[in-house]
Image 1 (cartoon, rainbow, N blue to C red):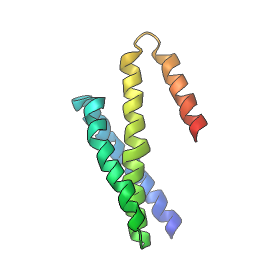
Image 2 (tube, rainbow, N blue to C red):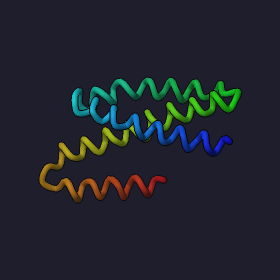
Image 3 (cartoon, rainbow, N blue to C red):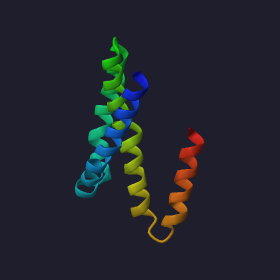
Image 4 (spheres, rainbow, N blue to C red):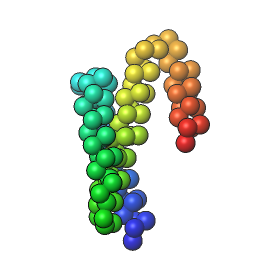
Length: 102
């Protein structure tokens, strides 16, 4: 039961990343990261009050969406704008560093 809930939460997160991508295109990476970072910090802090599977699911949903999902998407978009001529190499290096940190 809990494993299915985690899969459903992950799929919903990935679907919502499409909307976040449109927000990044519209408002820019800095504005989105500036808004998301304190909200994510509040979500991480509130995760200390988890008392049931439902609140665990909600906390995982919010933390996975806002943390690695949105902030990594902002980083990828920034790499694309900063390294115009070397975009492929820079994206590959960012992906390699991300995988090494896992």
